[in-house]
Image (cartoon, rainbow, N blue to C red; front, side, top):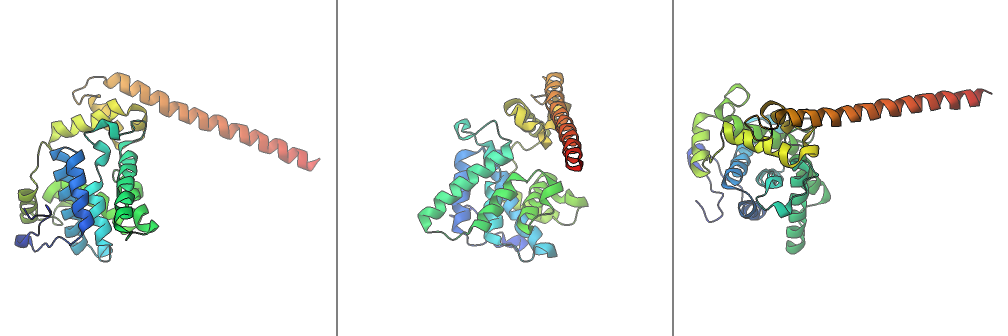
Length: 259
């Protein structure tokens, strides 16, 4: 491992860019997340670089932004629960934490990122589990989501070919897969349903809660589904009631105008 912790991997012709902020981001992520997560986020940065070389839509990405936001993308799952705001979905919490850290670093170092780059970081982290939006935003945001999914799929990503077996093996040799399996993934995603219940209802995590309960093993499944249905159903009722009211009000205003 290089002193930066983010080494080149010559066997697959990958040179990690000289981005001091990425090194600091990795140090920050290692300090505040588990080995499972900080290795995952580091690998995500490498997949981002690999995908950017292979896919023409990412040929002109802002490389510094791409690697920094990749490394920071899961700080919403910090081991220090005091850092977290459980009323927020973890992606938004993480985006806020990352932005706060970044702006602090920029203040110390005298800038270097404009408002657009900071917003890219926030958007990419907040949307990294929402492909229906992220894939239609700026290339850095779309790449973040794809690189995250690449780490969860390995050489099978998008049917195979984009991440080769050799590339996967070499990156994993540097940043080993630690407890990133089916049971751990269930426990992590279902834990979001347990710990951030209301904030989880409209997220990817909610489907885990509905299928596997709040402990990943079926516990609390029915209770979670009931709470979710009440919350989502209440929102539907609120919308129907609201549009019914303004519809009637519009008719009254039109009638008054015609008199």
